[in-house]
Image: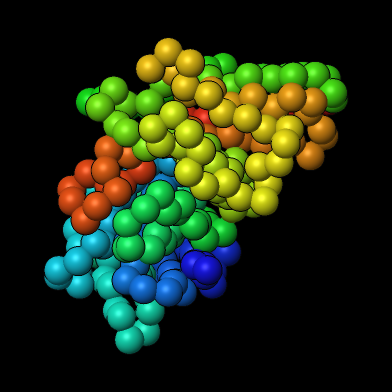
Length: 115
Length: 117
């Protein structure tokens, strides 16, 4: 079984400050890890992914995430938050073992960037 | 930039009625998925589809649900007899590849909000 935990329901950060949205995962095997963002009344937009290679991956809109195998974490980060980053962020995992594996999502973390 | 599209954006139906939610995946994608998100809850996997057959389904995807790719472009989700608890946002997704390549993330459509009265 695979699962994702996003321990914070909401993260508040001041505009211009660095932000971190936490994610830990559990899988049997090597993971594919993803971050998606959902703006109000919109679908899910892909931000970035970790497949293999460098532990620090860079994605859209200046976001990056660091894969930490020992801590089974994949925290989303951005050096300087914008008000427009306010949205719902979902971490997701899929087992890297081929086949038609579904993506399992976390419950989501609401990011509120305060002007 | 190619994108997944879904119609309608909002569907209101009476309990017990059949609904069909439609999706047009990205044209060169091979793997298709339906997810749902009950208001305020996380996104849940329903079913995956490849080569004209279901490859995996969750416990949510019971006999009331079915999927079809009728014409090589559309990918539909049918709920035969809707229940109140089927009210949710339904997302279609597609991916080009499953292997460790550059093309394995799932691209999601904007969703169809289903309201069952």
